[in-house]
Length: 249
Image (cartoon, rainbow, N blue to C red; front, side, top):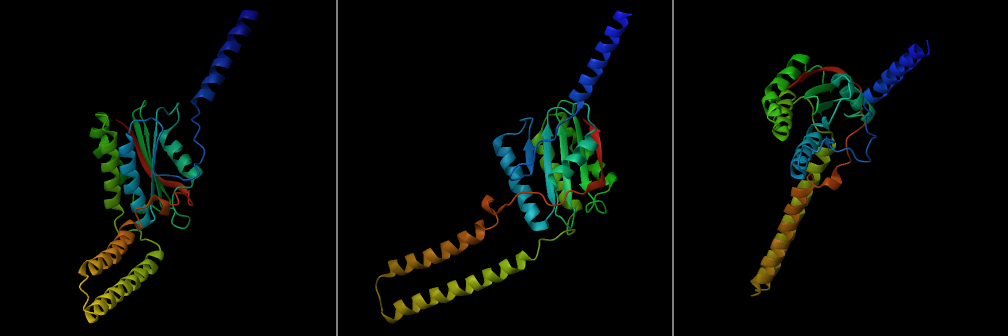
């Protein structure tokens, strides 16, 4: 009888330990959420940077947030449920639009899931999501993870084309650019007129001043949206359950 009880106890302990082990713990929310979270270390720093730049710029233009989570093992979790819970916990997507997308890759399990926020559901159907997965499977089978993510996100861009627009802040920025451009023009015109009236021979000084104004103006315009300091991080939405698909590769 004692042996039977001991056997049952061992089985129960083993079963409970497997349950605990099988639960994947979603990481705590970072202070600033970047689009690519590579916990498996399958991407190079350069690849992560390129994908981050691409997805940050896309979020600034469209407000749609695409989070790519790469993990080593699902620990028995369902990839669809895990991806949805991840999006909920990290609140991926804008608050009003709920236009977040989670791309989850599990390297050991060789599984991928794409889950959509409720705002994406009318445009990214389960059928279209599965189509994207099927298109990037050949890359995943060859362990070309960067190409798979890059191509997959590009397909998402095509599906969601013109579905979301940048917030109203863009209009204010455009007006500011116009005013700045006019100001620079008048400053350059004044300097040119002043030196022409004075019949100065110091043309190098004029060229230096013109170059200084023009370069400074163009530099500010070029880097205003590219600087990571202007990126506040993802988060704000988080209502998931708008459909999606998963598959093995």
